[in-house]
Image (cartoon, rainbow, N blue to C red; front, side, top):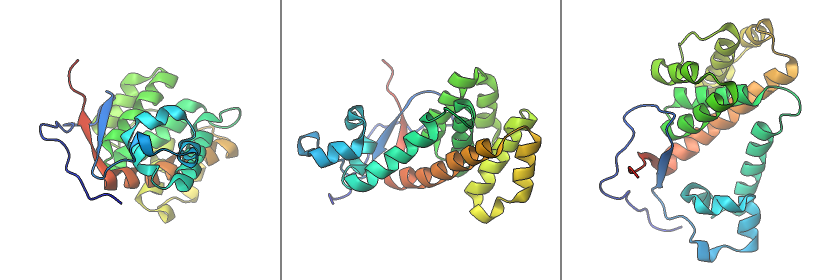
Length: 202
């Protein structure tokens, strides 16, 4: 593994949670593009991810990255049944807001807004935090996601009952759990490897 590197001077960290597109700066050297092998490319799954410092850093262990990426894609893109995409993204955004991962929260809040057309409600989650009241269905999703993120045993029958009362099927409840649990782990990984930064003005 390469020696740790410092973030570039002059970087402006985000002052608050946002739906704006952010940069992410690694504290360790990503794998150079010239060093990519077929095994690394298989781990990246999507060739476009070779442009991301985050995925190129994780590509140093391509087998684990491949499993991580395929799990991610199955949770968020395999929407033929179960929870609508917007609410999968809401679960991830709520976990990220609780964990303080500004970068992940920005990505998944933006997707939640895009697919739900409820940008103002999503922004309220970012601004006001996990105690915000949105509507019974979204509140149940946020509460369940936060409980799982706080510590998995904090999630229990009351959260399942609230999700069912809000109209979620068992398959949809599984999707809430998957989205929140995956990003509870992903937040901790990203927070330990680098930091978010505002994008320079064009």
